[in-house]
Length: 160
Image 1 (tube, helix red, strand yellow):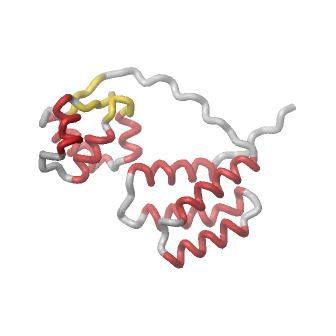
Image 2 (image 1 turned 45 degrees about the horizontal axis):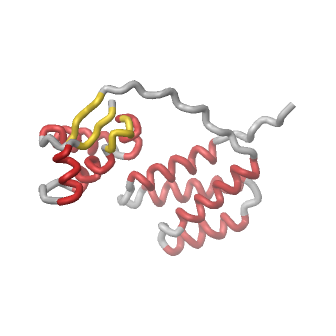
């Protein structure tokens, strides 16, 4: 199932004239006709998503379409060096959102790391501190999930 804005929904995004809660406005913006319900639930807790969706649907701001989800592409498995570089870049960019002491700890751990395994402590720190800050946004959730995936990914098998 995908959800997309009606003409009234698109007008509301522009005008911001209705008294929507921040969660309702966030759901309205994210329902772009391309994200499937499962994708939205990865970004927004179900307890927040469902009531907002019901309200927006009842208000005529969203409509639902039952669309078959295309098969997901096989994930690309990175080599150890590529995975390490990706983890360093992502962790470094996310560390700026930490408090001062946690940011310094994370940056020191990143600088000392020689491989993806060495970054496990940084991943744990970022997940714990950023997810627990109470200002978890869909973008932050996606970045944390990507960092977790990179940390969990096994090294690409050597070509025979």
